Length: 68
Image (cartoon, rainbow, N blue to C red; front, side):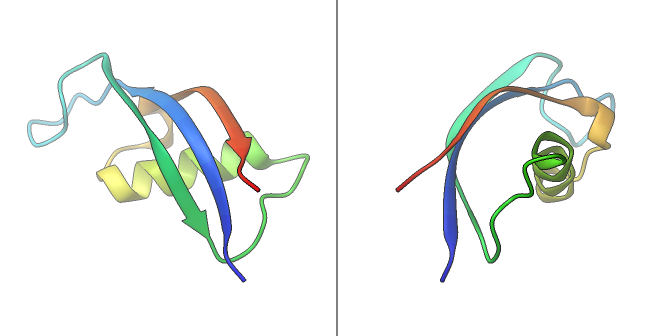
């Protein structure tokens, strides 16, 4: 069963095809497995960076929460 998370984050990519610096995003992310408690922020940043074709350093998580 998938686990859903609400995410609120900003991107700061320097690549030409990426959104402009400071773009703010929010929405629901659905994962196959729950995030681990100790590395949740890092795991979520990696997933979002991959989805947006950015580096992990270009993603700054403002807030995330598991949806029930």
